[in-house]
Length: 194
Image (tube, rainbow, N blue to C red; front, side, top):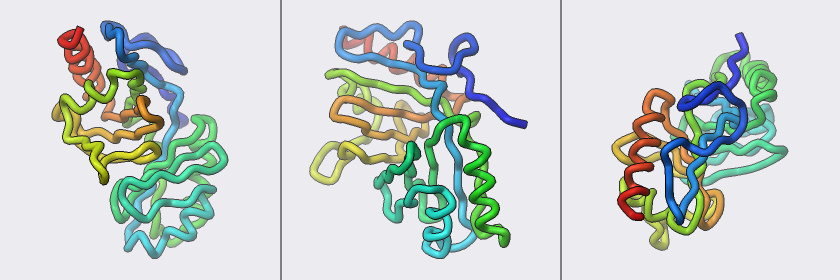
């Protein structure tokens, strides 16, 4: 079975659409149904699988929290000492999972298509940081979340993966079951600032 990412909020689509109900003069909120991803989980210490896993994935798997690596259209994010999320083209997911499974016939590292589990949002604009930090402990102090970094955190009491793509541009992944709540929360936060 090959799952295709569809909108968690709106009519079926594959691409990028503005989130209905979000109105802000200082920020834009888009739902992204064009992002594929694969979850890698190690059954042993992550250091024991990182070299082989990186070769099979075609992107270096980060070995520390917050670090993102990129190669050939793929982005790898550290989730824990034994797990990584790889963003990739939707059409590449199955092949990527197959390569990783073939690299680990002993099942020391498991790969699965994770696209259907997450809803991705893109929040951008000069007011995006204010909206995001209103409901989360994200810090931009010296050791906060730099451009090119990722963090698992709570935003509006929802578990999220926050990726800082650029100074005022964020990708935020939440479980699909929490996507409507999260979009409504951001919409209300934006409305309260207008």
